[in-house]
Length: 241
Image (cartoon, helix red, strand yellow):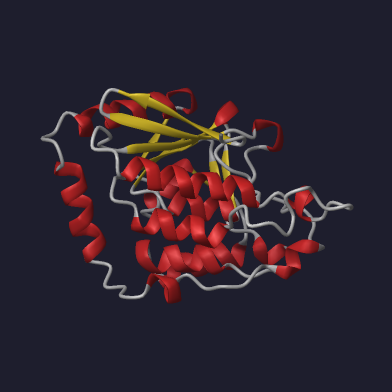
């Protein structure tokens, strides 16, 4: 049974919810493993036309949980085969269903990469995305991979080299979010879109996503999403504004 996430089923669609609000929905290996497993489950469900990805408590994802990563002694799951961020992104990359991201509050570093993995991203007006690894001396493997697919080198350089916060209206302007709505409307708008997609002929959203995925021209996803951890994060401080 999942401990750090849960699935809510609706008529024709589902919500995959990151459930670590006490840690601002930051990522740890077992949570990444749960997301990987949930995507595998939902994409094979013929009653699910699309998936909403959101965070509990009004937060999207604050990135890797540095407190857990740097904990001494290490958490009980450390060193065990419980999941990893790269495998999670491979599952999102290959997902057969459209993914709608409810971008509330913030998506920082690894949380930004999770936002880029969504096919439709609905941002709150005051929500911000930040690729701030430059402040930590760390690399951006997942963000770089997704931005290669979703945007341009110029936009990625602006985000990754500035390392600052980019709010909802500018995310739309940069082509990184689909819509910007009032903060309190983010989840409701995602649900409206999910209901719209579920109202189309059975299998139509999946067929469209298959066509979109095919345009990526990436033959080897295993090679495209690089291996290796971000060792600098083991001693890094939190990202600032």
